[in-house]
Image (cartoon, rainbow, N blue to C red; front, side, top):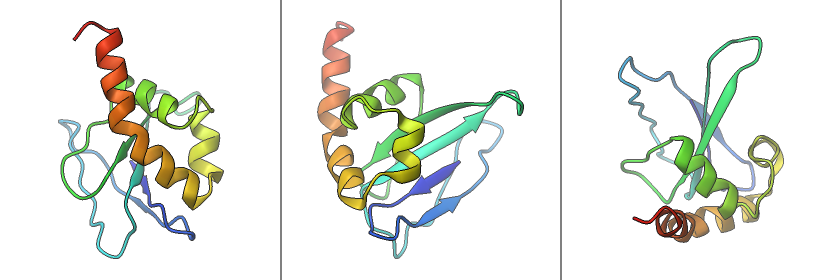
Length: 110
């Protein structure tokens, strides 16, 4: 699991997920919003999931959050976005995540 903040330096923190999928980061000194990435599966061809968090607290990272994150990031490839987006782009996408989740829920009939 990797967390990227929205500071100009693009600070990153990594941690392992627990056996139940939970995770925790110390976000002291980091700038919200945060972009999250988890890599899983076959090491030769790993898969990744993404999400955004507006600050400290609970964050989910699932296939649906990846869909919403891609919309929040303007439809761009999330692997490339995570690796090289500017601080402003990460902050903008993070601020759009709630609306992206709401739009996804609406389209799924929730």
